[in-house]
Length: 240
Image (cartoon, rainbow, N blue to C red; front, side, top):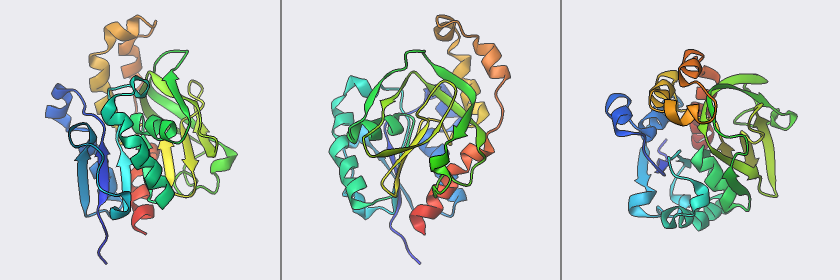
């Protein structure tokens, strides 16, 4: 059976020194999608090339993370808003990660801003809510599962028709769904503990300003296979 490609919609890249050693956001996402049986993948850089072709031309879309901030309303980012609205309206399977999660919420009428308690970074515990029990993407995860996280901004108000699926002690809106086939996750299913450790190596001074110890956070990192399973599961849902 042939399928239209799964699209990785790129909204940013990791730091060059991390990319040279470990690959980029789209590489990590592609690996997760392939683990779910995806064989035809396409990557589109929204910062360089603007919005992609009509969402109906893809089996599904994964919107990556970014070092940019949704609240800055950069033109390339705002240009994706009507495209994301059209994707949700068309029923195209969609998964937004971190920045992608926030941009999806913004596109659908939610609010994104800096978290009043500052950064959430490290291996965190995400708790599923009762509303996620029947969710096809998150419903099979443990009620509490570890996930990699790094974000200063978050979804402060969900879209009106969103279903809240999961949160953490720091971040109430770690996962939501709109309709039957569009999800946002604040945590990073594509990040390994090695990737997050590479980020922490350069964030010592910034975290110290928030009263956090980068070395201590790095020591507490651990693998997050349950969170990582979200990407292959999304691939199976999109291709099924």
